[in-house]
Image: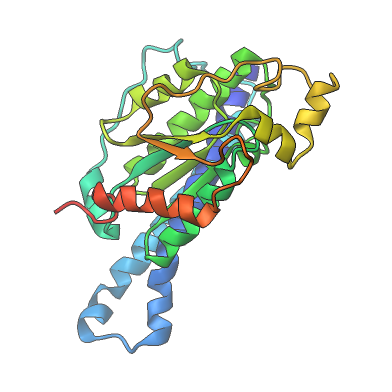
Length: 290
């Protein structure tokens, strides 16, 4: 039980770091305003409250991390916080509704779930789109599969069971980001349809936007930017998606992006990002609730 509790609280530490980083990014433009213009009387009046809010955010995040670390290192106490084992945990509703957060930053939170074979351009397009959103003054964050395995999911392998857990974890994290009002770009191979559908079921309608990066396997093998297909064909990597482990393509994705046809000619990342950006604009995601 103690070992399970340590693992659980370690995950909470990683999640709190992700969220506190996003909070810093959201508050950064506000802190820069004081350097560019002289404050009005009204701004001077609200400045203490803004400072208090900023301090509260950073202080709460730091306190949470410290408490989690202390509990993770403890060998005594209750096992009440084991998910699925406990009957004495409850959901605490906050006093700030999601709509309020979305109005504050002028956008609607959502999860753009990029799925496709390794080498299909998921992360390239996701980061290109993130930059385009930034240029429009919108808050977005990429959660990349490789990056997440450096922290939150570093204890997982590529077995079917661990792939399922990998997607479950990032699904819960991305839901938190969307609830905060952030346009969340998730770049994961996520080969199994049931796992993607399970993430979709976590969220309200229209929050989950599945983006299928369509490209022939042969083109991915020709590109092979990380040398993974070559290693898989040589038997050095087992359970590699598309080679000896299946990829189940989406049946009804919100967006299907043709990355390349069989001729191997790749569509420019900026063009693919623009297509997704226009989808967001048409869907009202780039403006806050009215």
